[in-house]
Length: 118
Image (cartoon, rainbow, N blue to C red):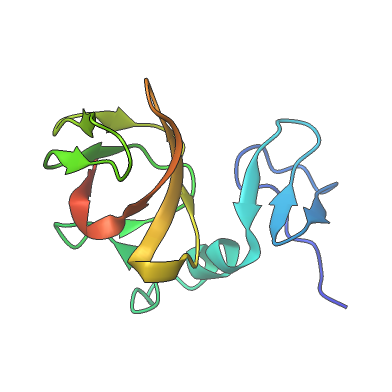
């Protein structure tokens, strides 16, 4: 059995697994078990998802889109400079490794090469 690690936000020890995420009942924070392991191994940045500038991204970061992105099946595009809060890192198909909600567009997956950490 794996031991529960305390919530990285509030330190609560009553966290529980929900699928591939860990959830804190006190503050509502969600994080992946692998992200928690990465934060404990601070010197090991090889496995992390990196933005366009080479900064390591983690769940909950705020990022900025660096160029206009066309949306498949829509006439609209996400403009460069759009801020996206509270990202989640995923093992998505086709290199889309960020799941997020973009204001005015809704839930969507992005590639980390088109964002920079804010």
